[in-house]
Image (cartoon, rainbow, N blue to C red; front, side, top):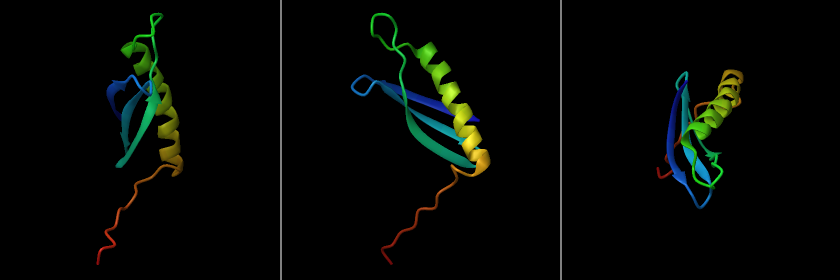
Length: 75
């Protein structure tokens, strides 16, 4: 699985993450992890993202998360 972690969003305490596997792209926010001083902890957040990725991979394998088709209804 390819994982792209976006920048920290302090207002929501999340990071935008893109998960890609078997031709399926899934985007979702993941809660950011903070250090003892309430600062963003990138290393611990990456560990959390890896945990979420295992669930996303399982859902992709089951077909719960799949590729979506976007159609233009302007015709």
